[in-house]
Image 1: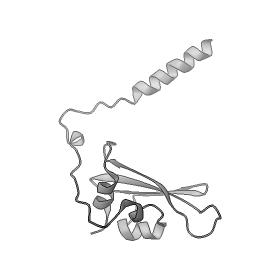
Image 2: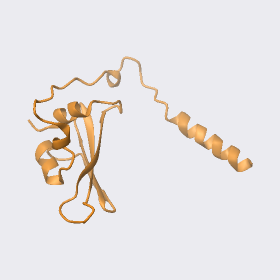
Image 3: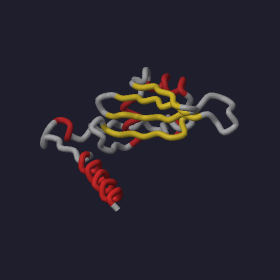
Image 4: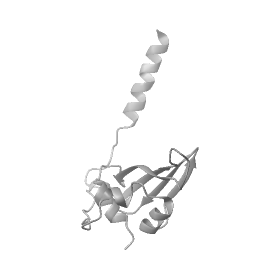
Length: 124
């Protein structure tokens, strides 16, 4: 019984520690600027299914590139947003690992439309 109380208290402390306390009106609370999305550039073909070389050609040098086991996380970021891509080898193990999952967010962690983030990060 004592272990349950301790575990419950620890969980409550961990959740309460996640609460953000930003300064109202600070630059980090402003929404990211909307970036026009080029016509004919669907998000799925821009990122999903692409290999690392294709990502580098589109977005330049990554801000983070790490491997863990068979997976690889490549992150691209600028003042507008962060794009995390997760590459895994195909089920049969042939060919280059490709993006099977992606996540986007504003620099402060707030949500952003994935298409807007991809457009903002693309090399110009």
